[in-house]
Amino acid sequence: MKNVFNNKGFTLLEAMMGMFIMAIISVLILQMMLVVTKNMNTLKNQRQLMLFIMQIQKDLISTKKIEFEENGDMKLSGYKETFIEYDFSEKKHKILRQKNGKGSEIALYEVKNVNYSNINNLLEMEIDFIDKKKNYKILLGNIFK
Image (cartoon, rainbow, N blue to C red; front, side, top):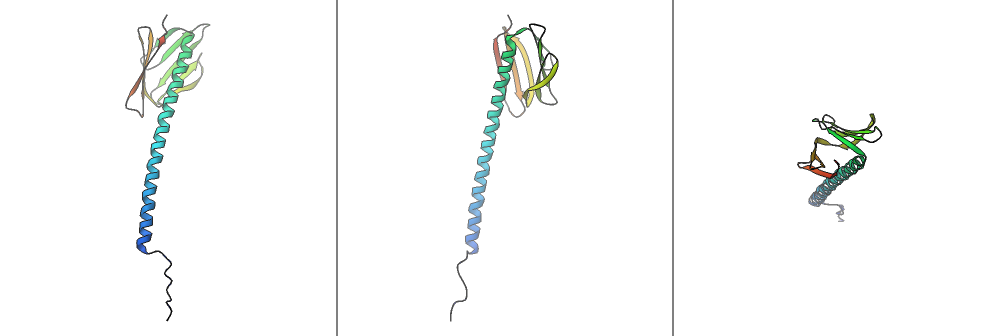
């Protein structure tokens, strides 16, 4: 008599092993994606900080007087009655830049705290970001002439 059963399928054990291997591959891919995303955010924050520093350096070139406020604000008074304000918004976690009291743009975001000070004719900025455990201290050139 002929065998009626067709034995071309997978056994339960083979199917479970295939699912197990797929699960391991999925976990590895997820971990790799998390690492890549974290690195991209770090690079984005570093780029953002560098752009902020470059903008302040550019603004400092035409500055005659700098005023610091305790709430993290800084006002740069320049030539021809121009002034630039850097306002720190603690609730919104960002530093806004405003020129001559007209409009404002986000200069730096995800900021927990910022302090400015004058140390030996250098502008020192201390910036704490929300997602970082360390803070940045930045010294900018001989600005107080």
